[in-house]
Amino acid sequence: MDKTKNRPPMVIRGTTIKPTDSHRFLGVLLDEGLRWHKQVTYAVRRGTAYVLQLRRISLSSNGIPLTLSRQLYMTVALPKKLYAVNLWFRPIYTRNSDDVNRGSLGTSKRLGRVQRFTALAIMGALSTTAGDAAEAHTKLIPIAQRIQILCHRAALRLAAHPSNHPLHPLIRRAAKRYVKHHRSSLHHLSPSKEDSIHEHNNITTGTQVYTDGSGTDGKIGASAVLYAPGHNPRTLCYHLGTDREHTVYEVEVVGMTMVAHLILTERDPELPINIFVNNQAAIKSGDVFTTKSGHYLID
Image (cartoon, rainbow, N blue to C red):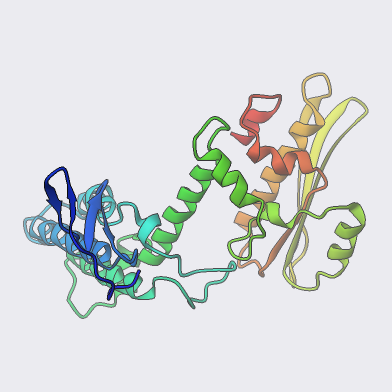
């Protein structure tokens, strides 16, 4: 909005309403340009106030233990400081990269200084202690990653709304547009078998993980294999039971769970990680909110 534009007072039934540069709505400060400067300042000031109080009761001589100080910060100070952060903070990590090149960089630094002060207070360390070292010793996630997680959770909650929710049509409409940033695995589904083969043959870097599930001779089972450059292939196999007790859909989902286990247990996997699954029903099962056979595996 143009700050130079004249905004005269409004008179409604004899009551004069004067314009203001900001307004509090549901605990969030909205400014006239939606630039969130006042909200960021308020969040930093509020977080600092809580940290100062935390420091008073976290003295190394007669204060509360480290674990309780950290728990108090995580359950009281941090939620107060990052209230509605998905509104006023723009994520600084994009395109599955660790490079910081855009977003609310200044806000991240200001909030990071508050958390560094918190880590020093919890540990009782010297003021010259490095912030990343203090966060590691107190087991605090860096504030930029913490906010990234909160924004991601907010996006997932919006995507998980049922069809009768008032926001569902708006989210569905936004989902139909081409997503340039923050693309998920569902945005990379190949339209045909030939396209999938072509994309697979063009992959030359990263870690490849394959999974498949099937039934034969009345038995249902799944397997997964991980290929990492410079390492021997790792495999997992699992037998669910007979085809009278389980379905192929269930075993496909179990195969995806095995893929996740292989990735989590791989030491320093080379990025990007490419996952190959030949069952789109299992891939899209996260969008299904109705109870069906095997859906307990997704939950």
